[in-house]
Amino acid sequence: MPPLRLARQNRRRDHYRRFPEEEYERRWEAVSALLDREGYDAVVVYGNSHFQTTLLEYLTNYSPPFATYLVAFADPEEAPTMYVGISNHLQYVREVSEVEDLRLMLHDPAGKLASRLREGGVMAGTVGLVGFDSRYELGLPWQHYRTLDASLDASLVDATVPFTHLTAVKSDAELDRVRRAAAVLDEGMAALAAEAEPGMSEADLLAVLQSSLSHDGGGLNNAFISTAPMDGAEPGEPLPWKSTPSARTIDAGDVITTEISANDGGYASQVHRPYAVGESPTDTYRDIFDVAEETYHRMVDALRPGNTARDVHEAMAPVEESKFKIYDVMLHGYGNGYLHPFLGTRSSNYWPGAEDPVSEGWTFEPGMVLVVQPNVVTPDERHALQLGTTVIVGEDGPEDLQEFPVEFVRA
Image 1: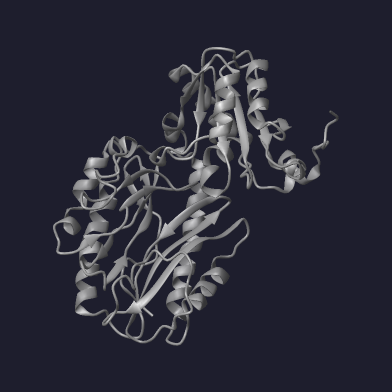
Image 2: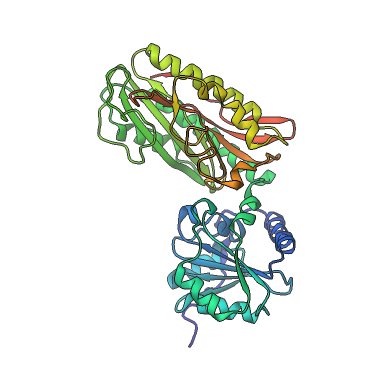
């Protein structure tokens, strides 16, 4: 069958954003060391849409909107191969990708993977399969796994957990992008404080953020915006996690809860601040904020090299011992994805109810990027806010990236 696409290199490559060559060399060296340490003869990495491409994009500079596979070998003589899921994207992938050997996935995707593994000398031994998220046991599509298993004498093992740690410690080049994202995010939060006013809808607030966070190489990543009256809200109204803003019109005496992320070249920072519209926070909201603020500072201070998930959990004591409850994860990894660890209180679904050994056994190292996000809710769920920031674990302690004030913002 003749090739469907030529996919030639051209001068457009110079206009796409990428890290220096030595950064990709560092990443592939880490992969090689992991293969050696785990005893894998090869790995197959699956990616397909935003939350499922972190490792694939990390190694290739390509974030696939369609099913895509990366095959890498322990044998240094065997170059990695990427199978592109849709033929008309092949030229684009050629321009952005750090992987030279590009092939079309269609048709018979798993058969092509098995053929490439045999071509690379992997008939037996161990092949690691890297899926999406070990918490949800999400991996390769069932049909692809079945074909691979039937086509090879190799042992197929889930390699998602070992690879989870590969992107956890960021290089200086990666941290530069996270810091730039944080700076832009500070501007967006200030714009929201300056422009939010009675009569605007939640969709209007989103438009303020979109215009203020647009910049060369990045922009708004996600925005959870919810509004409710500080007095007289119905249960669930003020909870922050609303993926789509509504047409609700805000009024004086409302609270605006936020979870906003901005990115710079695929690397993001996240911030959470409550806004009181037109009036001072009520006594209930002031009590909630005081608990959240104390917890926030304790958690940030706990993010030091050598500290563990349990150290961070102990820092959650102010909110755990209060009359309030926690609704969501209190800390998660970040930077180039929504990453491990995922930590919460004992009453939440994140400690230890999720039974996630990767998070529970986590030790913090310099270069890790975390989001601290105490979310404090009254038991009747009529009052809620979230207070958070992005933190880099430094050699000498935590670096809080957000300069926007840690306060109950008056809008």
